[in-house]
Image (cartoon, rainbow, N blue to C red):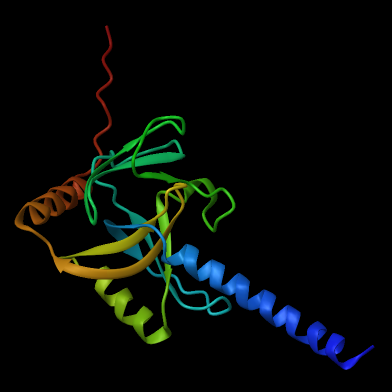
Length: 185
């Protein structure tokens, strides 16, 4: 084998990997950014790295959902998310989000998310997510095909209305269960 062919055989895989990385980075950087409220918890898997795991708190959706969501339609002026509605995949929607059945959470991917961060930052975020007087906000990048990626997280103080809602939920959770009275004839 001649020297130029050996050199080409050595360089071709490196160029291929560089092209794949560039395409992947371009896909990651493309899309519309939205700020989504979250509720969080932070399990860290030391074998796979450090991450913050959370539940999306989509404005406009009911708190209890038993059916997995396949498609959401985002409404608002990016990055401000006004509300989301559950929509059939065939519905016209300018900003769709679709669950990735092959992702970490499968069909639950629209309800749960994960953001990879360094170990020190993961500990800091863990403490912040447990704070009762602040709201976690995740920035997602939504692409035209409905796929999305969590790219950043920040916190802000709760508004007075959010504090009232939180306190009402806490009070409801502490009420003892009273079984319905049985009526007899």
